[in-house]
Length: 145
Image (cartoon, rainbow, N blue to C red):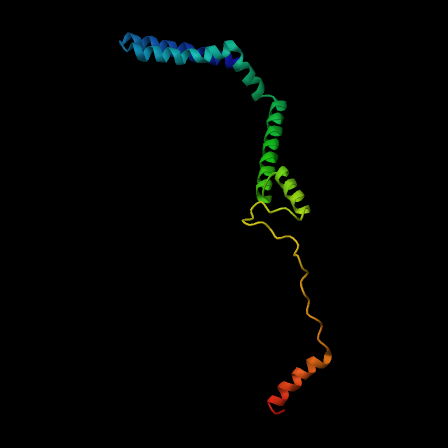
């Protein structure tokens, strides 16, 4: 009720200023002032002012704004974590599926991977204890020890 009265008073004052401006032969400015002064009364007539007043003094509305703010913070946090991990869930699943198959090429690879070799790598035969000591003995004999 108070908000409607204030808006009506602001509109009336604005229209009075517009009349004085038109009296001074500044018609373009007077029309612009009249347009601005009609906005508050239009907001009152459409019910926007009443809705804003009800929202501003309602604890439920402020709790709702708090819940919306919390939802926004959670959303932005998950986005930041997703960026740090390196991709969306769909991209991570595709990478996991590609890692399970050994014949696939990594997405960022410049050349295809070779996969398994055609022949197994040859492992050196374990040296016997005599060979190890014979090397040491040869070194010692060389230095005269």
